[in-house]
Figure 1 (spheres, rainbow, N blue to C red):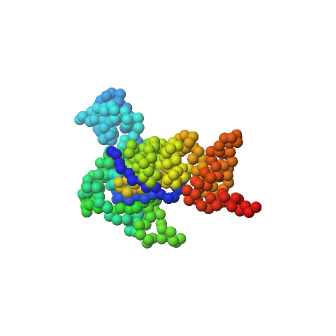
Figure 2 (figure 1 turned 90 degrees about the vertical axis):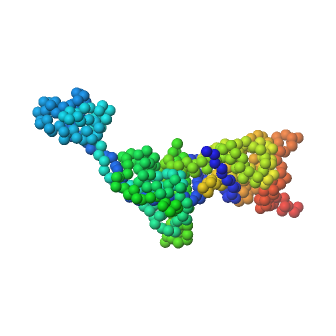
Figure 3 (figure 1 turned 30 degrees about the horizontal axis):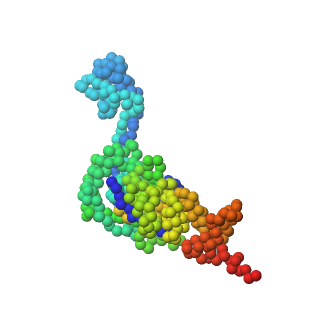
Length: 421
């Protein structure tokens, strides 16, 4: 399904992130905390020596009768029934009056494992994200952080509409279905269902609303998985630490989640057929210069390659071609991710323009030092004096002035301006 994204260029430089991480600047997020839910855990209980013997006899004979058992072991035939009970419950054997028939597939698995399954109840805490339909199993540490988030009212942004499909649904029904389908993120394999006595009267969003919070986040791409770290700050200036800073509550979600994939789609937004044109318009203030689609350098980092005419047009719009730009991209849920976008020269004509803008950028980073520009000027002197110089002092000054770097222009012309002889 195609998405529409909104792009807006910012005045600051992009924040440095590693090549596999996308930075979410701001995102409203709806969440529901389910602490200490009673769930069914599967464990394994070792077989006794007699159980192993009975199972092995049944595998060998196909059907083991009480008479077989008595004649082989010398034990009372009635003893076979309690010995075989756990094997029958495990579907390794099927009882028929006084005999036990082997069920080959299950029997082989039980014999190889030398154990039977045991079910018991335990507690787990979960986080439900109705906006992306994620249910996440929480570690004890993460559960405490989510509990703090829910308990402290100042972190809550507002109450937002809950998805209609989930309003009035029994929590145990939804959670049990997801556990059985193995669709709960981060849940151990030995949790197989909700417990029978989990309260089915706990209905989701009976009033049709869900708590919403404002967060920033990092989403790390790890192969085909996404690792999400959420960071929440109080929505109101209430809670402060001893240092006067607002407390940050961080929550790490085990991947992959639909939320992480939705946010990584923001980082991949320029790959869409019409989206990169919207990105281009944001970069060029609506300029109608045609160009090629950008190439991906890393997660959230893109590059447009420019020919000479396109580079000239952008330079005339008072943009430094060598400076990486920060662009905010927003999705329909108002999550904002920062993209880093750079330009690169596509031919020799464009490369001359880029060389000048790189020297200007280096001069600015050096505190408006004219040395990088003087170095560029020295490199531009042709080996044959009859050849024209491609980049002159006047070219450099005109470009510096057009970009509004007046202090750098003064530093560049200072030796000439102060000659009084």
